[in-house]
Image 1 (cartoon, rainbow, N blue to C red):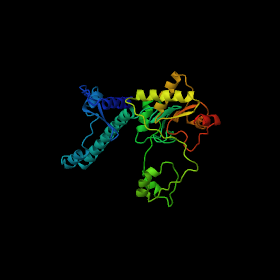
Image 2: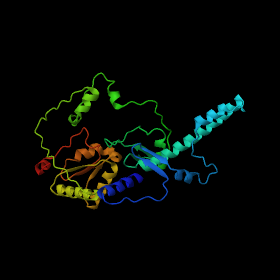
Image 3: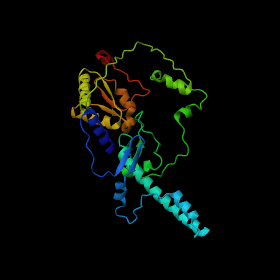
Image 4: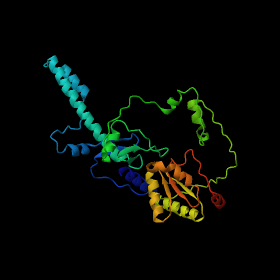
Amino acid sequence: GIKAGMLKTEEIYMEQNNKRMHEATDPLYFVIDEKLNSVDLTDKGVDLITGKSDDQSLFVLPDIAAELSALEADESLTEEQKIEKKDTLMTNYSIKSERVHTISQLLKAYTMFEKDDEYVVIDGKVKIVDEQTGRIMEGRRYSDGLHQAIEAKEQVKVEAATQTFATITLQNYFRMYHKLAGMTGTAETEAGEFWDIYKLDVVVIPTNRPISRNDLNDRVYKTKREKYKAVIEEIESLVSAGRPVLVGTTSVEISEMLSKMLTMRKIGHNVLNAKLHQKEADIVAKAGMKGTVTIATNMAGRGTDIKLSPEVVAAGG
């Protein structure tokens, strides 16, 4: 998709600092602002869409305040005529505003939302994927017509629009509770935030047994191709030693790409992502068996323990 192409191009020029970036001379039809998470038509884009229309102002919103002021100041019109012209003006503005908004949301759906990354399509329905956990957010829909735009893009049934009546930040929502407490394996690194926002202390509880996990140094590769090739080679090495492997990924797309690479090497494996979340319990239950390879997004194993068989423990875990 366009988003993936943008990221790939950005990586190429970041890897080669001295390489001069290609100067675009072709007309640009729209502009993507990643910081504001928006997409806007350029004048060329507007011309392209309105080229076959007699109304060249099809996507140009009128200055409603100036036109209403001019109507009020026009002494040649009766009050009834002014009301009639105001109604016509407001109707025209509403139609154009909706038209511009629809095009904007469709552009956003095509350029900033990737299938199997931000969302998946299951049983003819577009379902949002939580970027933190990799799980499907059942019952949740993008608002302001964006979900309908994605449904149109994927050529599935366009459902009724949802409307947001009120919003609240998670921080303010949690502060509405009289008591707050919780347990997590990553609280210590965020201790400052817990105190600043909630005035809560973080207490580290020692493990019941000595930690047997070995934390290795990071390995950095110049390209994704080299990185994923090294991942596959490491998996092959561990499987040949009779050890199970859990491969963590950040998106459905990457999990499926690694799955294809393993299939090409004829390495048996299980995939746990938002598309296959129904099989989570079965996949996690088998993840600790000898030579088992499990590819997972962020959702894998949350709140569950992967039990190791005795022979796996003997092989090094």
